[in-house]
Structures are given as structure tokens and as C-alpha cells.
Image (cartoon, one colour):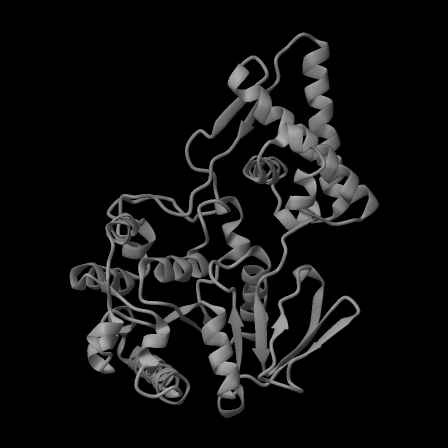
Length: 373
């Protein structure tokens, strides 16, 4: 979306507010509510359809509880307008420090930015508000961001930061066979130390925990442009599973922008609740689920997209709850340090590819077993 279009929308919005105020009317602002899942897995819902769900929130200056939220939103809106007019960028933290005594807390600014995105029907990057990037990439890929060239191919096992200005990325070149997303930096570094990219022609990405917006946008850009298989490796615990679903289905906080952030093609590579028995993980490496873990799993089991789109993921999550244990990816390497890179990941990807080929061949017979994997 062009900056000029956003600026025009902002000016029209401010003009309508002023018109209401000067004519003695209390402005009413509708903030639509979006959701990427509901908690009724058997309902015929419209979650993830990119359309608002429910009635949203009606903000008005006549309600004292709304005044501060509107004050913050209008202040942030004026800052955004200036950023766009001057073609400059700012972080959410920079914006907070422009009026800390008014904003009071960073989360207040975050909500205001989300409100503005909903009102202007745009993504956060369209406001020239950028997040500090946490993601890393390595492997068989080269691309440019503006005037900066990211040449990962010349040293495939060296980490590079994922660019913040994803919309400026162009000239993507790769000879990779697939993309591997890993949950955390420690596993990313293990793969780098073991020269994984040399032995396996791939691209590896980590969001270092819950992925930020640049990491998610960058991954989506690669999948859309390169049409490569993409796999995800996370800890076998409720937070690892939540990170996996954030990549595939998006987050509730940014549900209004899910269509630009989700990666429906991503496949769960591991770690699975059934892996300890299959790969002989010692019992001392398995940790009992806490009460908070169990509560989180029970809540995630109700997410409608698990039942509708990935029922096999839901079965694995139920197994985790039944077993009552969790473990980290690193536990798979308890016997051999290089087990993860030499055996686990290659065997998992081979199994995925083999299953895809079986499904593909069965299409000629009018059936496919993909949903039963």
C-alpha cells in the first residue's frame, strides 16, 4: 500500500473527527475485532478468513474509560502521519518515549498501533513502524535489501540477521532444496557448528523463540517466491507447539494481519511426544509437565484450526498431555552430540518427502492419506 494512500486516509479520519467535534457530536470510532481461532473445535466458524469477527469495539469521547485509549491513538496517529510524510521509520519503543507520561506503558502504544492498522486497513510496516529484528538466517541463499547484499551462499554456515525492511528485499537467488525453521538460537548454532548446510543444501531460519514480525514476513516471502518445502523444529513442550502454530496460523494479537504473516505450508518436523521412545531418550531428560503447562495444552486443544486443518497435530498435543512429560530438542543428542544433524533431521525430512511421494502417487487412484500422517 502506498504511503500517500495511508496519509490520505489519516487526514480523512482526522477531518471526520474534527467535523463531529465542531458540530457538537461525540465521535464514534469502530475498531473491528479479528481472530485467527475460536475455542469451539466443532463449530463451523469463520476464523482465519481475514474478515472481522463479532461487533468489535465502539470507542467514544463520551465514555471516560475510552478517553485515554483515544488520546493515545490520536497521538500515535499524528506521529505515524509525520513518519510517512517524511519517509522515515521508527520503532514502537521510539514512539513510546515521545510521550512516556501519557502512554504510561509500552503495551498501550502497541494496542494503539494495532488499532490504527485496523482503522487504516493496513499492515504495521505500511505505517513505517518497524520492529527490532531478532531473527537469523544461514544457508544457500543470496538476496538484497535496498543497497545491502546478503550473500549467505559464500559462507552457508554463517549467521546473518534477518532484514527489518522485508518489503525492500529483491533479487533472491537460491540453490536450496528446503527451508528449515528452528525454534531457538542454541539449535541454530548447533547446526552451524556441525556444518549442516554443507551436507544438506538448505536454508535455516530461527526467530529465537516466538518469531517477530520481520521473521514471519521474511519466511512468508521466501515460501511465496521460492516454492520450497518448509519444516519447523521446536521443543516438545506447550510453548514450542505454540511457536509452531504462530508460524503456521498467526498470532491472536496480530490476527488482523494474519494473511500477511502466516505460512500455511509449514510442516512440523519435531520434536514429537513419541520421539523419546523411538530415539531412546533417557528418562532423566524428560521433565514433568507443570500445572501451567497442562492448562496451556488444554486451552490450545480447543483451538478450532487444529481440528479443521491439522488434526494430527492435535493428536500429538493430546499425547503430550497424556504422557505428562516434555523435553527440549537438545535431549535428542544426549548420546551423540551430532545426532540431531547427522541422523534426526535428515531422517525426518526423508520420511516427510517419502510420505509426500506416496500421497502424490495415490492421487491417480482418487485418494490420498496425507491427513493421516
